[in-house]
Length: 102
Image (tube, rainbow, N blue to C red; front, side):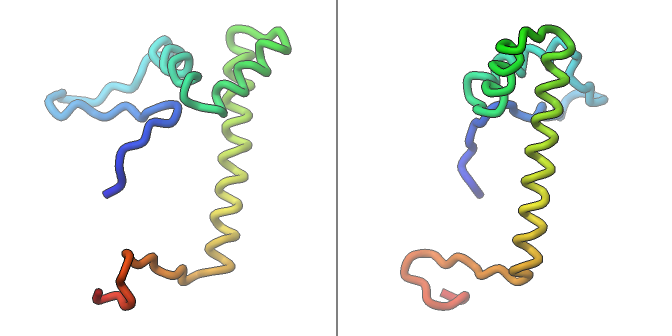
């Protein structure tokens, strides 16, 4: 429906041929975060802050997780406020359409 967009981390897709889905290992997660730094302002900002504070290892990832969760909570709050203000959001019509039937 929407074009695929790459922003930071990508969720690991299950392998349809595998008998069971295995989550990423911690090393794979760290590698994914390092690679996602290039495309994600959130990851880049948090890791730069951690480096500036002299953090390394687990503390760096705790800061990253904390900041991500704070931002997610803010996003969730705003989404709920938006839905509360507009429980029936208007539909977006394609160019030239004036009714829902086209």
